[in-house]
Image 1 (cartoon, rainbow, N blue to C red):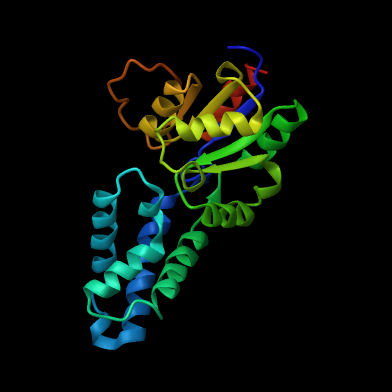
Image 2 (cartoon, rainbow, N blue to C red; image 1 turned 135 degrees about the vertical axis):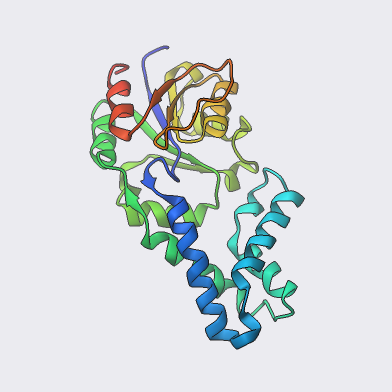
Length: 235
């Protein structure tokens, strides 16, 4: 590749861990909130929320609304015969507060971002999610001042692995595909999606998953520090 000018990082499960732990905790918190708010009528809200989430994902595959917890809550409450308008946003707030509470920034990530900037390398977070939620995460993780650009699927209009989001990241950073590198935990979304845009990838396989059958080549790291060490060889 040409001289490295930009590194694109996924956010969830790449710059912090673990989204899954926060998601599980969020369901527990929402069920408690629903029963406190609606009494017996709120029982089973966690299951209704999950069902709504799956329904929206099936109805609008790869589209940003499938990440909107307010929409999940609205659909869930309506399916339960409850008035969604006064309560859906609160349910979503309960969900996200629980997720935020479980976030832990990857060891070495803040320092490595500072190191990248010291070498004149731009940083973009390229993520499937709504902009305001990802901004809040970056603020809470202490990373908001360490990145140059946030690129969300909400802004791009479609989720990774569609190349549109990677093209937008390159335009923001003012780089060509061979001047950029993508780092992410999802082989399909991050590595293969970046590859389709001509960008090399690093698969942060911190859960030690079996490598998918693919002709796409990439460096495989098992923790953030290993990924950082590899990127240093490209300075």
